[in-house]
Length: 325
Ligand SMILES: N[C@@H](CCC(=O)N[C@@H](CS)C(=O)NCC(=O)O)C(=O)O
Image (cartoon, rainbow, N blue to C red):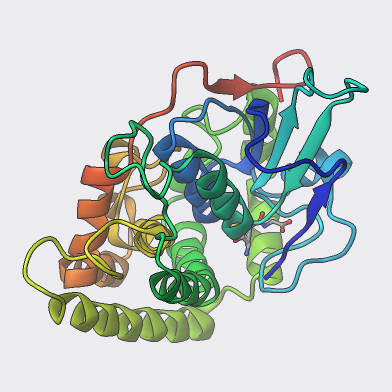
């Protein structure tokens, strides 16, 4: 997985609280939704600088990775990108410490590590529980599922959704991805003006066509069937993927799979995204409705309802270029 973790200055964990977190994102992207969910789950305030695809290369130019991360659809300009700046006032030389994380898995692990309720708090802490469990065997299962969803569900959902939105829905739907506060006014305008070129570039870069979309739909269908069986075979009571509590495995499935089952801003998704009804192709709508009706699809909806949470007070959006970008 694409990972770049730079510790400009190594410091002991938990020795101080971060003072400023900045997320650079492609607003509607599901990997970015995963990072936002982690931040909101632990009620950490952060400022989000939002971009649209292609425009993000300008936004991320200063923050680009040193090498192209492995995996489809990711370049050196990859998002999510989280900067954590610590105020080292208790440090002798008073220098600031900056941590940069540009992978959703690394971001989630970092947040859980820094902000989860301590293992021995027995539910007395007001902080949300550890998303990776305090038990080593469960942690290994959670990490394996997260890796599987990151590599399987993430890219296939992206391809299926882009196929429906960019190639089969009215241009107004693709145009809307650049509106509704998904980016600053100038980006919105550029997205709209150059949309036909951007559509062509995205389809080319991510191999979005009838054949690849059909293959991705098949893979997703099988994956959802398998996950439904896993959820149905668990102990009675609320179903979760590992143990009896919400973990990084559920969060990853819900954030990366949410778009394919029609999760929207109203359900808690942290950006404007089209609903099932916005898809013009009847077969596209039927596919999403069928996925939503599976046990795994229902689990995603339930995770949004019970665990998505809201932004912490102090969070907001950041803009550059006179507030236009
Ligand atoms: N494995 C990475 C994948 C991230 C990813 O694919 N990000 C896409 C957004 S959906 C992106 O920023 N693509 C644009 C680029 O790489 O230039 C993660 O989990 O963070």
